[in-house]
Image (cartoon, rainbow, N blue to C red):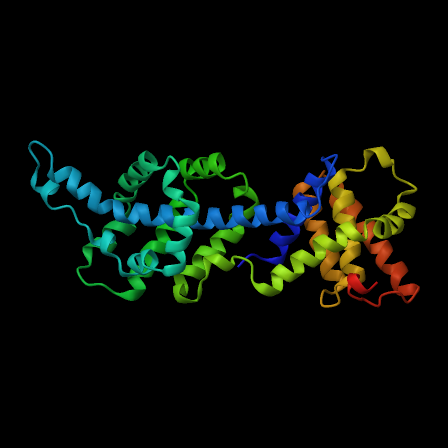
Length: 307
């Protein structure tokens, strides 16, 4: 499921969106955040849909070649083992996945020609040839070929990456997480629920962190601003301020998250999403605030709703 790091990214993006809006309606923040989560589900569903389309194309290739005006013996005997992959059909018959397909309609994306092109390339790989050379079906082998197609053939493929970047603006943010989610799904299909892309505990964390960042904005800014005396306020990136506010919220209101974990998380996010100097800047400010809270014996985390 979605990780806390990705939740932080989506809350950061939500808060940044709100900064650019003049009039924010009640409940707008949660709607924006939910839209980010929906985009992650849609991307996951599409990746699995594309994987199944590649695997099933063996049948289409067989039909196309056998219907030639003068089919050769090779055309008449295309190996369709991949299309009958047992794990593939477990995916296709997965009830939650079927519901997600109906909701997200990945088939509407312009993908047909790319599927054909990539399948023809896949057909020439040693891994594919080795797979179809075995007449028997083995559960481990069935899973390994799908893992190979996704992890080692599709993900590194420049055409596939460009395709994802064109249709999914969140691909670069979610790529690492998606690889883990797909691998987890292939390893334990029955336990996966596409209608619960965010687990209940992480959904609560997301709601509370977003609400705390909004409700306690003046409190967190009141702790950050005194630390900016040696910095030109006009040159501080908006994302840096948002990340520091989120970090201070975790210091104050999220008792299960150690301060060092919080600091390291926001250093990494600043490095990945803001300016080259942002990691060092965010580290310095959050570390100073944390030290002050400890010295003043104020590191008594409480739920922000009760503060």
